[in-house]
Structures are given as C-alpha cells and as structure tokens.
Length: 211
Image (cartoon, rainbow, N blue to C red):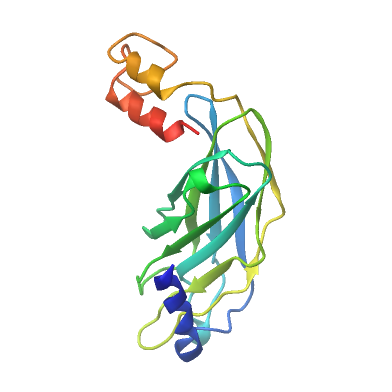
C-alpha cells in the first residue's frame, strides 16, 4: 500500500498526463474451476489506442481497485494477473472480506506496453446462486513511469456496469474429509491428474477452492 501511495505522490512532479481518453476496465467470465464448484472472474484493462504526453502508448504501472460484492463469503481466492506484467500484489485477506475488497498491484517496468492488461483473477465459491460484482468509482489506475522523468499519473477510468455472475454449485466438500481420502479412490476429491487416487495435488487444489 505504501509503495502505491508513493507512486501516486510522484505524479504531481513527473506526471505522464493528458491521456487521450478513458481507460476501459472490464469484468469477464473466466469459466468454472474447482471441478465445477467455483466461478472465475477476470479483471482486464485495455490501453489500446490510448496515449499520454509526447504521443507515447499508454502503459500501466499500478492500480488500486475497490471491488464491491453483493453478498459475503463468496470470494475464495484473488490472484494477480500475469499479462503483460507480473504484478507485485496485495489484497484484502479473503477471510476478512464482507462485501468489499481492495486489490493493489504495482510494477516498476518502464517498458510496460500498450494493449490488454490482465489485472487480477477472482475465484468465487460457496453457496449456489447469483453474485453481483461492481468496481467502486474511487478505484485508481496509474500510467507507467517513462524514462527520463515522465510519469506516473492517474488515468481517467471507464468502469463497467455491475457484473452479474453465479456460483454454479454449493461447495460442500471438507478439507478434513479430503485428507482422510488420501491415497484412496474418491471421485469427489480426485480433481487433478494423475487420476485414480487422491494425492497431494488434489489436496492443494482443494485448499485453493475451499471457501
């Protein structure tokens, strides 16, 4: 958090400003995970066609996204995006999330390109049924640091409409039962190849999926 705030405090002196439009941020259905018990949501930003001072393609070096969730107990995992940057990343601990979580990512890559940015991936599990996600207007994204002495600066955002998704099935599997099925044939817990018996890879996936 402190690094992110420091990044923004520099913008008044170094700002790569005057971006020629608003940066679209979108929430996208990423399909199911956890053997059909979980829903993946991807968060993307698209800098295509956007430029800053001196006509440089807009690249990104930081973001702070405030995500509102319609019901508690459904955010199981939040993972940083990997395209085109590997973000240094912190977030609200999922077990602490009620109906709002904060995602912060940053990078010092001065060659951050224009194009599509995968900012984060959310995993939703828990009780079956609809979930609505929305980005708070106080969310922020910063342009890249351009050498010499240009950037970063806050970028105007185009936030998506509330995104309605659904948890496909109620997650009713227990980690303790999963451990008890170690080295046994149990299709409920045998998720990851090699198939046939429950092994450590299956238990790692179970930890990942457990709400």
